[in-house]
Image 1 (cartoon, rainbow, N blue to C red):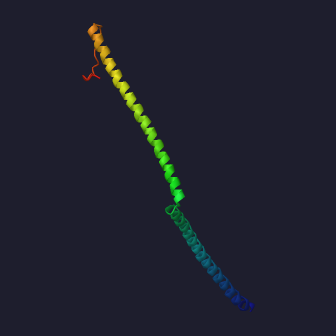
Image 2 (cartoon, helix red, strand yellow; image 1 turned 60 degrees about the vertical axis):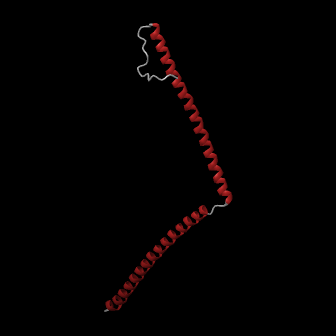
Image 3 (cartoon, helix red, strand yellow; image 1 turned 90 degrees about the horizontal axis):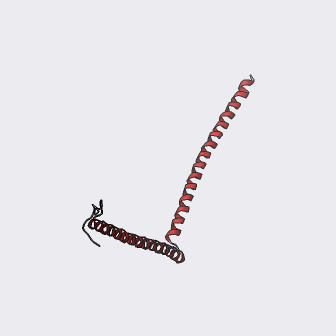
Length: 127
């Protein structure tokens, strides 16, 4: 006899509480989705502000960056010139040593020293 008096209200309360829990879960999911979207938009806004700062640098910043780049280019140019000079001086030394070797071999041949032959790679040029 008490079963219908207790069972029906208890069932109604159970369904009501279950509905509240589902509603809260739905609202939580919606809220977390919105929070995620706001975070993404905030990150994009920060990136855009950074890009604007790069695009609209002050004259002093631009001048400082230009002078730094110019200094680096001058340093690189000096290194290239030193390397070029060293290569040219070494190239002259190589040509001189080849010419000297060729002359010594010819002198040895004319003097009659056995086994002395001019360089087989001799191209006939004299320097």
